[in-house]
Length: 350
Image 1 (tube, rainbow, N blue to C red):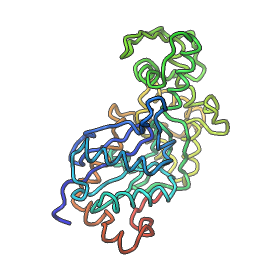
Image 2 (cartoon, rainbow, N blue to C red; image 1 turned 135 degrees about the vertical axis):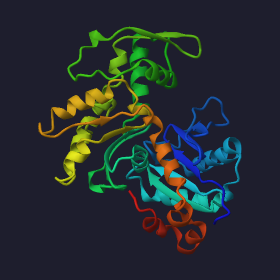
Image 3 (cartoon, rainbow, N blue to C red; image 1 turned 90 degrees about the vertical axis):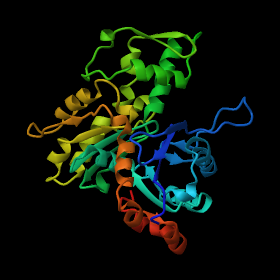
Image 4 (cartoon, rainbow, N blue to C red; image 1 turned 60 degrees about the vertical axis):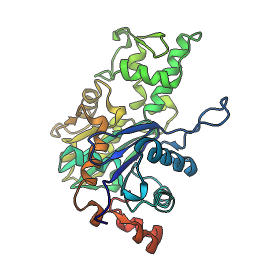
């Protein structure tokens, strides 16, 4: 396979699919993970919900659009690194392999967990990854590139739930001038933040305005703080039995061996677009310090580029000289052994 061209990274997210070659520091394209009906009156279909694929045909269509319209590449010439959330169903991994090998004739494939790619980008030897995107949030402790499976936690709350939550508040306040979830996302990314203390007072929120693409100006006050509350209290978005992100981190640390807990507490790495809120790192530190023993140091790593950590980790992995020959599953291997080989070949089969 020495003749193959640079590997492609496919990051299939609930909100967006990002793609490009591993040589690039950033994705070269990002398209919404949605399919529009031929009937303009029907709402678009979202084929991935909370990281889980709901419609494989639609995903195949979107991957085809990526190859043909965005990257303009021949899929049979480029190995693929496919990113996955942790603890996704094995059937998703197998079906995606089938689509890429059989329908797009990909020459080689490797599937890796988002959090592990974030770990590669961080340059740490141990880290507890808090990954939060559009559709879900996960906490994954990783040591020397290997995830500790029994300490992984997932939460079906991400940026999409916050968008809806904020839109509901705004539309209750101004029913004659409603906003969409997409417009709420824009407001969220430009105006919202996490209060640094859990006992904050919404009356302290400063009024701020933002001009939407359609020309309307929307003013938020306490909503700037309220919008982020579901991260710490998922019951606000109907996840009644789920812990908040601070509790997830705490539980994950203490599911690990006693000898590893201090290392993970001292290397909590934020990753994903839904961790970009100002104040999130400080709030997490306060919440965790009130729960762990005084002798345990809490250190939150909030790199300004954490929104693209998964991509950068993927670029590091897929650019290794050994990636295609020693790490990937070849199409020949897949044709010989079938989907059963995925569990053996993909070492972080989470």
